[in-house]
Image (tube, rainbow, N blue to C red; front, side):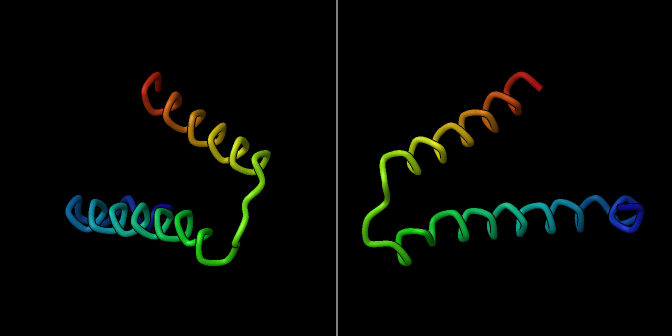
Length: 59
């Protein structure tokens, strides 16, 4: 973590952008591996996203 803090702000933003891009790719790739996704799994994923959004919004 100290290595990341010592980097220029532009590089930090670049790495953060690529990290979020990678997370989006992994999250959306689920449609390629499963033909059917149960309602319970969809509810769990939606709850996780809701927690993340509330955490960011309410900080």
